[in-house]
Each structure stands twice: as C-alpha cells, then as structure tokens.
Length: 79
Image 1 (cartoon, rainbow, N blue to C red):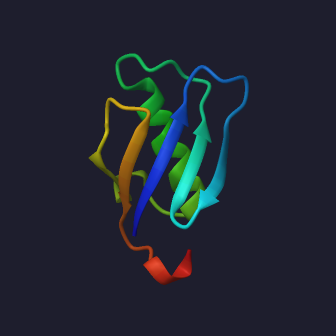
Image 2: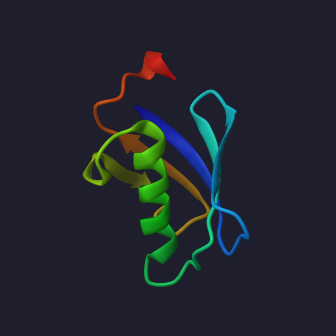
Image 3: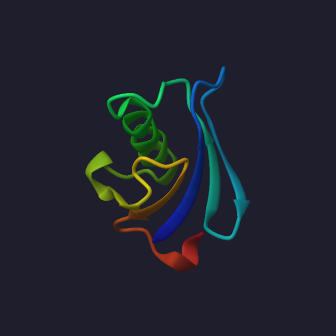
C-alpha cells in the first residue's frame, strides 16, 4: 500500500491521524536531524499497521515534511 504522510516534528505529542484516503498526519517528538524523525515515523507506522519496521519503505520525500511511503504486505483495499 502506498500512503502519503505529512510530518510535524518537534511536537509535544506522538500521534498518527487519518486525513483522507491513504493520507496521514504524524506528530513526532523527534527533531528532523540525522534521520531521528524518520526513525520515529517508521516505528509509529509499524505499530499502526501491525507490521515490521523493515516493511516501511520511503519512496519519496525522505528529507521533506510530506513523504510518500510504501507499506509492504498491506492491501490497498483494507484502508
């Protein structure tokens, strides 16, 4: 499944919300330095979709606030 995630780093909360069809907004406590926010995002998505961290793959926007991510093993029709 391919999803789009808008990231808000340096937030006071750690949360993931659905904003549209296959669109999410993630509030992360980590700072966007040395990939820390991306690592936290991977952990959050793996927990949300009940999959392994290795099944979360950045397709586009690894250094951007808007990221395109593929979640391996999740069917598009489920979400």
